[in-house]
Structure formats: C-alpha cells, structure tokens
Image (cartoon, rainbow, N blue to C red; front, side, top):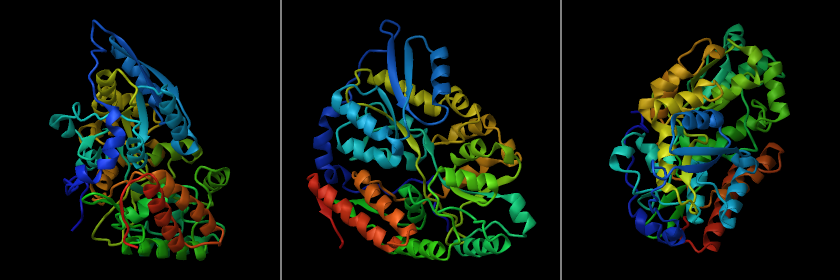
Length: 444
C-alpha cells in the first residue's frame, strides 16, 4: 500500500525534551507581536530570497497592500553563498525581516538562534491550510519556526522524442531505469539517461529518503543519527553500480557541462523535482514540445514513493520587530491566489504549493506548452502525496552536507564509494553535534 505524505505523520515523540538544548539556544528568538502594519502604523519589511518569481510576488503584494510594504533583495542561492550571507547578517544584527530558507537548512538556523518562534501565529486553522508533512518539516520541539511555501517531490523529466524514436518506455521502477539507461547508451554511446549530481548532496539525500531512510530521529533527550541504515545502503549500492558502469552522467548541477549536454541532446533525462520544470524550460527553450514528465521511478511498481529535493519556507529573523506583518506577508505568499499567481504566472517557477488549495491556482498560472500542455500539476500532486513520511532534517545539515559533498566528488572521480560517503557523513554529523553540546544517540 502506498505511503502518503498527505496523511498525518506520526508525532515526534518527546520532541520538546529532545530539543532542550536547541530551545535554550533559541530562547532569544521570541515571538512578540509588534503592532506594525496597521493603518495607524504602516511598516516596510525587508525580504531576502533567490527563488524564481520572488520579485514578481513582492511587486504584486506592494501593489495590493497599503499598510505593509516590502523591500526585496535577491541574494545568491543557498548553496552559492546565500546561507552564509544570512548567517552573517543575523550575527551582525542587520538581517532582513523575512528570509527564504529551504527545509534542509531550517533546523540549523533554529539551533543557531537565528529565527523567531512563530507558534503563536501558526494557529490550528493556519496549519490546516498546509500539507501535514510541510508542517512537520517546519516544526521543531513542538514549535513552529517557518511558513511552508512549497513541496518539492521528485519527478523524472525525459526527452520523449528520443525515447519514442528508440522505443524506450519511461521507467516506473529503478530496475526499469537501469534497463532504460542501458538502452539509451546502446542507442547513442555518448548519450546518458540522466545525471548523478556530485555537487548536490540533496539529490542523493532525496534518493535515500524515497527508499525509506531516516537519517535523523528525536529521542527522549538526544538526537539519533544513522546515515548507514539498510535503505541508505541499498540506494548507495544501486547508484554506485550506475556510476561504475557509466550509465549516468556525473556532471555538476547547472554547470556548463550539464547544460551543454541538454542542449546537444547527450543527456535525455533529468531527475529533478516539481520546481525543475521551469528551470529546464529556461535552459533549453528551443526544445519546446520535446520533453515530458513522469513520476520518479520507485523501488516497487505498486508503491509509488518520493523524497524531496529542496523545498522552501519563509522564516522571520530573530532581530525583526515586525513579526506580525512579516507573518502576514509570508502567509500571503503561500496561501493566497494572488500570491501564487504572481510567483508562478511569469512561467519562471513551477513550484508545487504546500497549500493544497493553491494547487489549482498554480496549474492555471504555469504555462506547460514546453511540455506539450501536459498536466504537470496533476503529476506533482500525486507525487506530493507519495512523499515517504518520517524524514526529519537534523540541526547539523551544514556539516552533513559538507562531508557528503566532498565524498560525492571523490566517488565520481573513482577515489571513494557511496557507501564510504555515507559513513563519512555520519561521522562528521556526530562530531559536529557533540562539538555544539548536543546529545547524540549514535548506533555505531
């Protein structure tokens, strides 16, 4: 039976106790309500983000609101320097009011005391507007730390003209994916079915998430860490074989090598997420009508499953004195028809809203002509419902990803293995957590 992310997750037993150390660090975050943003006290918010459509959504908000205005600054994406910029601004006391932070990094910013506790604003009625899984990923220690924006289930995009020409059926399972990869290579020796991105740890993390892994757990009074569980090792062995047999490309994500291979037709598939449709269409606009999308392959054809690659939230910095107005702006971006239409209508963003009520709005706003008019949002909604439950991001994502990223580079260079990469990530995470004074339940 398929596991559904749209169903409530199991409660994080003992989370409040388990995150006692985190709570101490974040006590200064506060949630005090400032009377800013009313007719008697108009206010201007500052907002930092890199996600596509952010400028358009800010322009739409400013055009429709009189007492709250927003000043937007585009920053580099998190992996290209956005997160260090945010961290430094918080330390210096000059952080903006509203921040765009992806789910994997949220717990780290919380543990550093960088964000405000928004629990008093995220009422039961507000929580009901979002997928339960999105609320879980923005809740730590029983408290809400951000407003979810999108869910980002995995999706497989493929060149349907190439597949049709060579009579290759889009794979439903990972076993079929390997067979299809072999057929692609036989049909065109320089062509590959997809890319294993060595520079993006979240790509591999989504794969193990989909397989049912749970790297982080909250125990009674400590974090549980296990990056070498059976699901992770199974996933590592599978991808190691594909890499060793040269059945997938190993170009870095969004690198000239990768984008050139898309344009030249030597990469005919993209293991991405819901947000990837807009990105892909922007990279190869000349290939309009040649691409299509299907669910990401799963381990069992009868049990569709997905992890998430990225996905973003809106948080309020600890130094902001305009919390109520900041939350109002964040909710408008995530749950209003005007906000979703503004962001997605420019056809630069294909995000799947974390608010199910907004999915029809996104479907109407996004131009799918690049994909032959395919109902992408119908696909995304089903993929979102198949996200494997139980995944929790730990408070040491930076250390985990740095160690994993270094090893992934060595893997594709032949100097390491994915199994060793998992062990290295585990050890680096445990060391970092203990260095920061957090208790760890280490199964090793």
